[in-house]
Length: 578
Ligand SMILES: Cc1cc2nc3c(=O)[nH]c(=O)nc-3n(C[C@H](O)[C@H](O)[C@H](O)COP(=O)(O)OP(=O)(O)OC[C@H]3O[C@@H](n4cnc5c(N)ncnc54)[C@H](O)[C@@H]3O)c2cc1C
Ligand code: SF4
Image (tube, rainbow, N blue to C red; front, side, top):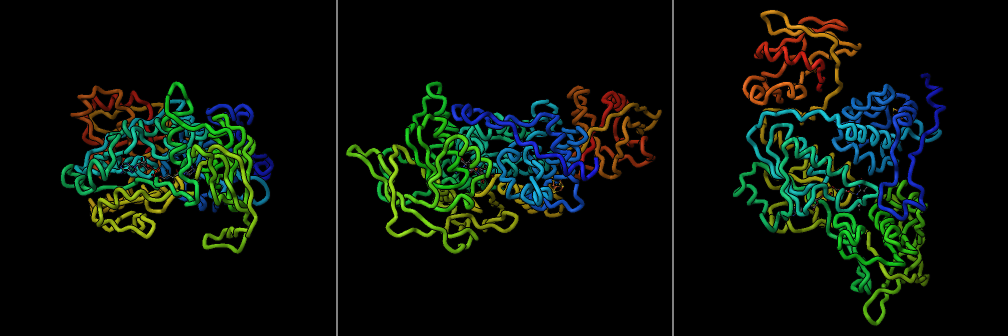
């Protein structure tokens, strides 16, 4: 397809539940792309030589490459391409603020609408999950080291996923009874279905990560005890920023005042929205104000709408353009009936004689000069007030670091806000203790927490195995190469394979994965005879190195019995790993 033709294709917006329907249920709002729509949207990508979109992605997902694979209908290969850099694409495709990242930089955006990169990412990740064509986890040789990960949010999950692939024993300690952090206790079902998160946690469990729930580190055990009593070699702290911030105005102790943390945890994690099936108590206001303009505020407001509120107000002290929430959430919330009281801020909460909230008094604001963040500073207008009649207010103006761990481990340095201080790879002031995600940066994004986790996994590996200077290897299959024919050379350990398509195996990059074909073997045989693939393992299946042309390769397979080789051939395909 020519560039001009690609430019002429219009962006396909995500099909969604109609606002009047979805405002009454908690099902996911977008339906997702079909295969046809995905290919059509992918065809808009110009495969730019210097792709700006990649520069906009905090973890540098190879965007044009994965989109080109979608153009060819290679959806599985596309998701594996993403997973080289981002192990949670089904989640990021749904919740990343793409308009300020990859999509915000897309060349299409200059004249029209950017390629829907997030929707495409979500599509291929869902395709893999729904089709069940997940590559089996590799069996990695254990390296004898144990790492404790405190907190199961996106940063903790990323560390665990990277370390397990490098042969570590990885144990995640989580305060709640479920894994996923904010993904399961904050972001509502209608935006991020919990089965998507559970699936990712299960995947890690299948790979060997151990999850220990209902364990509050700092109470049940200290960080020091994780080393001295439990024998961990390193500890990663990914406990997020879970301490709600209040406004410190009169009336905050009235009944009907929630922090967004409590409101969403009760609804999302403890399923108050499914009452009476779940009997978690939650005040369901008729007239509800939410203070704040970020994703947390929008999630709270949209939850209140779904819990039958008549009027839901977002009270935010800046203008709409400065709202930090994802554009899609603001747009969806507006369609669902949320009323925006912008450039205003509560100054007092007023109650009745029984201590129940009845009103909020707000002051009007105007925009002033930009502050340190570059956003216009909100300036209160003297004497300009208004009141809203409400029976519920949810404060969503931010979260601070929970001090539990740092109070019980005083040799970890924190800054004046209580966030842990680290170097760029997540090393804290305490040897072999690392940290990342919101506990370091303050409340941020899923993708930045994941990026921090990846860097910390690298640092842990470097520090525990100083000689092995290698990146955590994500071992993501690049493509499946179908074999039309294969033969064993008599009295040798050479296997000839002939490719059915024109795939070109890149020499030196190919590692034939035994795990993909292990189903053809008895477990005992596998245990005793087959050399395992593991990073740095000399017995790995070798790269094709003897003869090469476009279609024919000879594979040298050392240390492997011919009986087993004949079974390998039955597999008729090779997974080409990076
Ligand atoms: C309602 C809401 C909506 C959001 N929406 C978006 C969005 O749309 N897009 C986006 O990119 N970001 C969004 N964010 C921000 C994003 O979710 C966070 O930046 C991200 O989850 C941080 O990841 P983390 O791993 O650092 O911590 P978290 O996800 O906070 O996970 C920390 C985990 O540690 C556990 N923990 C805490 N203390 C202990 C302890 N002492 N012992 C054991 N476990 C402990 C907690 O229970 C939790 O499970 C949202 C946040 C919220 C609250
Ligand atoms: S900038 Fe846009 S058009 Fe160019 S490669 Fe990235 S997604 Fe494709």
